[in-house]
Length: 322
Image 1 (cartoon, rainbow, N blue to C red):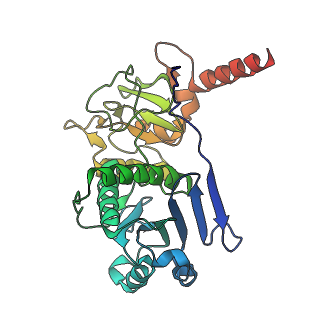
Image 2 (cartoon, helix red, strand yellow):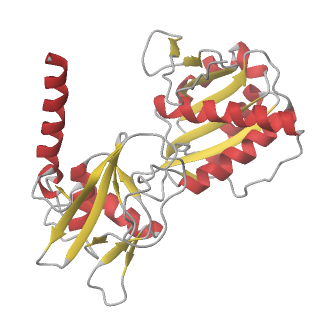
């Protein structure tokens, strides 16, 4: 019998439906061949949300908004209920959860999610969210719930994998896996973040400051530019302007991802940290606004990130012309 190999990086189709025809109102989302159903909308349209038929089902839900204590970070409350709509009405009256601006509800189209399934998913989502650290988690505790048959756990883990796939596409980052450097990539110190390396990665890039004695290494992994654990950075923001990256710099210090050394001369990345661009990464390393496309260079060469990217695009273009 011929061996059939499966490509684990198969594409997925997400079906979005804008209920009221506007991009920021109530919407639904589904993935082909997945029984899950996502319903989300702003708190200002809670009345429309709770009248949806999905809201009387069993499911899990997320309440999100800006973290009032950490600038630039999202705060999320994670819950479950066998009547999600009723639970959201209760939360709307709870002054201790005044932060939330949007609600996201996940139920099952075939209505086969039970209370036990929802409690298992809630437990796993809280634990994952706390582990990846993309958002602050409002829940005071992380309930452990493993009281499911083995087959049900397998089904819920698959269901959860689809939740983690669809939520980042809808703008919710709190479950997104941390990007992981390729196994061949050297780590300067500390531990790499957990999570499978499921996307192609770039060469190692290096940024240096001879004046301040700094050396940092990074790698482009999927959509992220990841500064590797052990990389060195300024111990404080030295830019003259109050740049938006200063908020991110201060937050990394507060979270312990950037650790100032005892002699105060530099800080070290305690883990791999993902940024949205090379410039964001170099700004944190140098403690000032920076053009990362020029600052980062392919290791052991003088080729800038910009040159490397342009050369890569040129090779692809040339290959297509041939």
